[in-house]
Length: 318
Image (cartoon, rainbow, N blue to C red; front, side, top):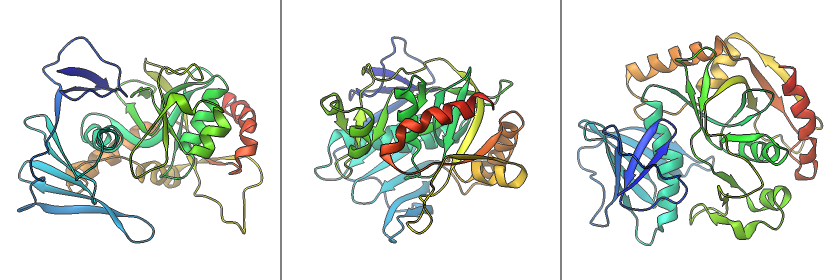
């Protein structure tokens, strides 16, 4: 049995997960992950309560309850049966789906959901260490979080997380807990940031052209200990061709605007429960007591990634 840690979550699996750093000790609190190739995940009796679709209307993700268990279904790719009382996660891959895709969905989709229903605030964000603490970049998929984190990591900032920000609110100020040493980038971004390093990357999933920069690369450092969260920057949606962003700018968000920007990017498994909503509101409120939030606009131009030095100067005065 392989044993790993993803942020505060302990995980054991008979299938090796090379994206994670092994740990020596077993834990009674560990979740057990397994892959089943016998049939599909249960479907009868599932009360579906959440789905997510692409902008073109194609459904990608469905989440439902099955008694005290949950089913998370990724269309035509795989389903995951999550049993919190037994602390087990069972993956049911579709025909021909490779192991790397299952590992990606586990680490970057399912585990963040579990963490979001546990004791921490979990946000869809990347983060680096800059100026004596962590700075988070919050935003939906495609907003440039990983690109920005990779550019800053190349300029000497230690990477804390690529996509799943775990915030420990039991400390003052709030701290971020590193998840795992990985950085997922589109091929053009990879060429711009780490030219010639494709041989040291791996495909993320069979349905995506993204590449995962391996954790042993010399091009960036990964921070393994918790860091105080100094600031959170909300990335804007991609600018239209009619109104491109021409220069970097940071604007402080306050009150409801800051609250809504963080809340809409939180991870949860059971989004339909009243207690989930209440905890989310309380956790975001607690984070904002010690963490300033800014709206960050940057030119979406790979040729201008060296301008991250300007950003670092801006963060130094937060």
